Length: 291
Image 1 (cartoon, rainbow, N blue to C red):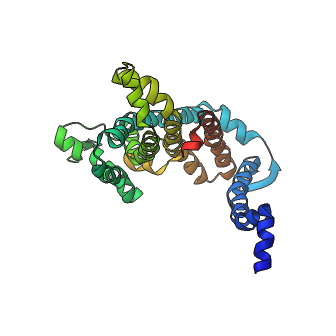
Image 2 (image 1 turned 45 degrees about the vertical axis):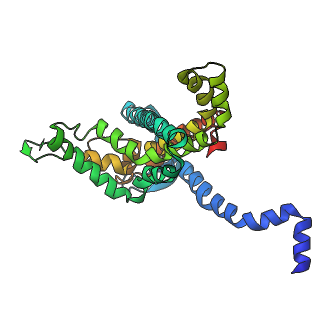
Image 3 (image 1 turned 90 degrees about the horizontal axis):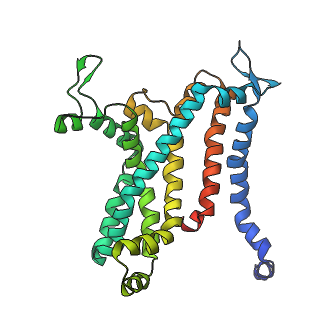
């Protein structure tokens, strides 16, 4: 064992490979391999009688997924919802994280961070059904339902529609935006803020010229989570709209249930490509250094 230890110390790369080799190989086989299989399966033709993929290759599924306006419209709406949710999470997370990091008393910061993370302690489906109960309209199909919390308290509710999806998704993924921004603010040296004030800069000028440029990587890191998680979600839109709103995840789910696996695989190329492009843009902003 001592000889083996000395050998590993002399060969660092081999030592690193022995530790990380199995996990990396597992990820390549299970994760990358499954993605590759999904892309390949999009090129198989579906047998109209058996509803199973054949050995015949075709590009019709890709053409249908990327040129049919009905499907493209669903993708565009899904991207729009992901952008709105990301923006809303940023608007809420920035002042909250700034207060916790720079304004709140040191003894209260841990409690506030725990409070911000409390939504993650509840089950995903529990939160989805809770939002459905809150957003329920006063009547459905001409039948008085009594409404949910918002209707009973304020006399108004957005009902089961796109606003419901945005509100529920923002609530679900807000902690993933708060944490990176809080970490970025916590690493911000107080001396920079003091120096800005010493030269006569007002608080808003300091925030705009000093704080925001340094927070860009942290904001980009948080947006990766909120954008990608919203784009691929199909359970929450089903729950809070009772199937009235269709996003790209719902489209894939419905196509798989048709069943039409090759076309569903072609649809999955949309979020895959969108997320790759988005990650490339966020990498240029230094997001991966803040995750």
